[in-house]
Length: 218
Image 1: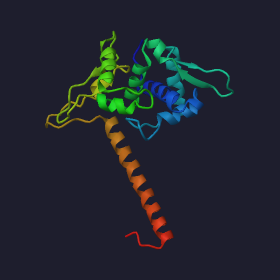
Image 2 (image 1 turned 180 degrees about the horizontal axis):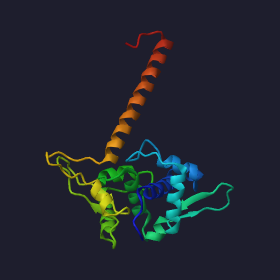
Image 3 (image 1 turned 90 degrees about the horizontal axis):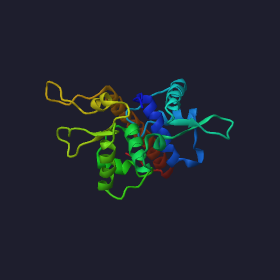
Image 4 (image 1 turned 90 degrees about the vertical axis):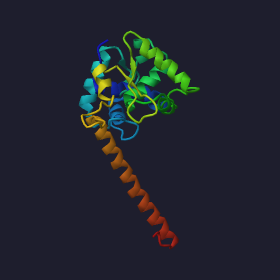
């Protein structure tokens, strides 16, 4: 199987995620998939894909049999076929989906972030499936070199190729610092904006409640 484009990987991850988190609306329409791709939470990097771009990604995934169109609906809907095509159990599919959606993570982070897709008993169970994925031919995941100051190494998926994993490895620059990819910077900035917006909403809520109670919030 050829390597996937970043958007194809994002679309595939969204389909796997939503199958578990919103089963009542699965399979998904193009509109729902696009919304899932562009979520501001639980995504790294945060992107702004158009429906036309998502349709192109879906066509690419359909050519690989990783996605197919569902039946029985007036609106065209799509579902994934990832486990069958790649010959993977549901646990491995869940791990790959979270890696495609959130970027490189430690085993502990993966266990936490996979909670709604598959509940792993412990971190050693996560490590076991990651080791199986890394031992496949071709390998589906890779354990990255531990970043300076980090307590644990992170894992990255290889469905978009070795270059994609290397981008997230955090190479050091000439000054001894850690080089951050453009995607990671965009994700950080988007998260800062989201948090700032949440703070403003909370401030407004506190002021409204204080006004209703006749007290000074300051």
